[in-house]
Length: 346
Image (tube, rainbow, N blue to C red; front, side, top):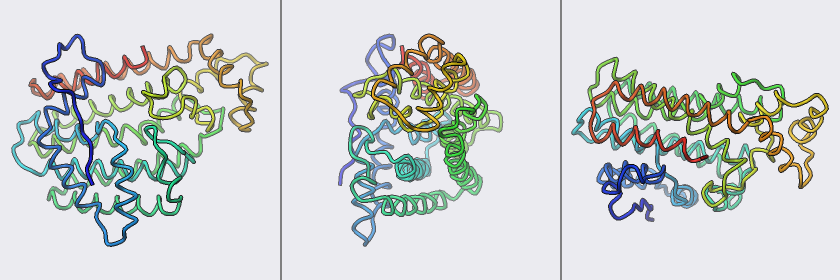
């Protein structure tokens, strides 16, 4: 089994002013390329099992691609502090296995049929199989954390796993609930997305022997980046393109997810429009034209514009945080990734 981590021929040499988000990701991936080869080996090793379904199903998820942002955060964070050991590879692989496990569980909970343009594992193999293989990946991730031999890192990543699970439950509580507030939405994003971003970077910094202030800066940097990244993703579900999203535009609307564009749109709707949101989101009774109607309301009431503005505020906080750590090619690449991430919806 092979895992694709293709990059452009020489992404680092491309003029910075000409790079978009994917170009910025390619730069960071190129900087950590040798580490990623080792991360892939760790992932492949820890996906193996005498039960054939496990490597088949897990391999389908891993080979579906993705930007690998979370393990890159771990690798780059370690290099920001000139780390020269090998434990950052184990931690990056653990982070990716945790992420993979959560994706398998998410697709079952959300009843998703596509991820990154391919059929989800639950569609191919079934819900029970996906949940159990997700559990297996979690257990293998913990083995890697233990192998790294740092109790504090184990505490950070294990806590993040619990927070992610809490976020999934919290999202269930807000799903289809048009009374969901901005604060409740942000709690979901903090738990489901930002927690793993934060712990990934914090773990890398810790084994790099950073000081307490630098550790906190890396954690906050990645947390705010994770929030900004998710906010833009939520906006793109209404204004993006399927080939770049890797999923069908409008999936969040059809699933009744209370993302920030919906939260804003419902809060700003006129009294006679509440029935529309009640029918389409709370009751899940949608007509083919409802998605365009929802987008029209969002455009009128600046729901998308303000979602992106919120993302930019968190990106600015993230950039302020990364300025507190050593300035080198790794911290520069991390900053560029944040800067370009919020331009995806422009």
